[in-house]
Amino acid sequence: MPQDFQVVSSPIAPVSAYAWNKDRTQIALSRNNNEVQIMEFKNGNFTLLHTLTEHTQNVTGIDWAAESNRIVTCGQDRNAYVFVLENGAWKPTLVILRINRAATCVKWSPKEDKFALGSGSRLLSICYFDPEYDWWGSKHIKKPIRSTITCVAWHPNNVLIAAGSSDFKARVFSAYVKTVDAKPEATAWGKKMSFGDVMGEFGTSPASGGWVHTVAFSPSGNQLAFAAHDSSVTLVDAAKDMKVNRVESDMLPFRTSLWITPNSFVVAGHDYVPVLFTYDGTKLQCLGKMDVPAKKATKTLSAMDKFKTLDKKGTTDEDSTRTSVDSVHQNAINQLEAYAGAAGAVSKFTTSGVDGKIVIWDIKEIEGSTGLNIA
Image (tube, rainbow, N blue to C red; front, side):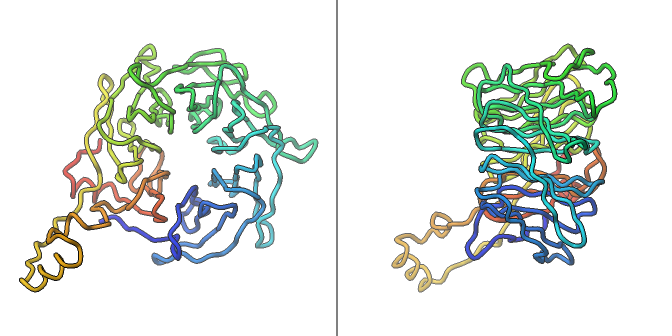
C-alpha cells in the first residue's frame, strides 16, 4: 500500500507546489498561499523548520536543486526568488524577471546553473546568475508563444527546454546561453541551437485540443511526452523524424507527468490516481491505473441499522451516500516527483494533491498489487 500523509490539515488545503531536497529528508511546499514551508521528513512525520514569506501572493512553483542546495520559487506576484542556506537561515535573492503577469512554473536545469520560468506574459524566461551585478538575470523567449506558459521541462543536455502553453501547443526551444553553456552537441531535435530557436512545435488533439498541462522529456531526451486538457496524451519521438503518437483517453484531464523508466511514464490529474503509459518505440499505450483499491469486507446491517440509515439518509445503500472515494487521493493530483532511484530507473515517486496529501508510491508494490509490468 502507498504511504499517504495528510500534510495540510485544519483546514485541509491544496499542496499547490512542492520539491524534495537531495536525500529526501526535507520538503519545501506551499499550502496554496504566499508562504513556502520547509519541513523535515523523519520516521513518517513532517516537522516545520522554516517559513519563507518573501512572496506577497500565492506561490505557483518550487524547485530544489539537489547538488547546489538552492531553492527557487515563483508566484502570482510576478516575482521569483533563489534561496541559499547560510548560517541556518535561508537567504533570498530576487530574480530580475521583467514580466507583467503572474509567474506560473519554474524548473532548475540539470546542471543547476540556470532555470526556466513560465508566466502569463506569453514568454519563457531563462534565468542565470550574473556575477558582475551579483543577481539572477533573465533572457526572454517570446516567439511564437501566443498565451500563458503552463509547464516547462529540461532536456538532459541542459540546453533544450520544452514548454507547454494554453495556446494548445507544446514547443521545444533552445535555451543556449553563451556565458553559461559550452557549445552544445547535435541532438535528435536538431544541430543548430541558438538562443530562442524553435526545435519543434506540436499541437494537441485536432478534433478538440486543450491547454497543455504537463511536458516531460524521456531519460534519453529523444522523446517528449505531454498531456492536455482534452484528456489526450501525446508522445513525440525526435529520433524517428518527429513521429507523433497520441492516445485520447476516456479519463479526466492529466495535470502532471514523470518518466520512471526509459520506456514508461506516469501521468496523473483529475481522476485522483496515477496512470501508467508505455512506449515500445512504435506505439504509445495506456497500461492502466496504478492505484487499485483493496476489496472491502461486506458489512451486514441489522434490521435496526437499516431502519436508522433509511431514516437518516433516505436510503439503505451506504455506497450511494459516501463522501469519500476508493482512491488514496481524495481530490485531483497536481504534481509528481521522483522519490528514490536514478533518472530513468525510478523505484519510488511521490504525488501531491488538492486534498492536502503527499503520497509515496513504490513501483514494486504497484506491480504486485495491480499486475502491471513496468518495463
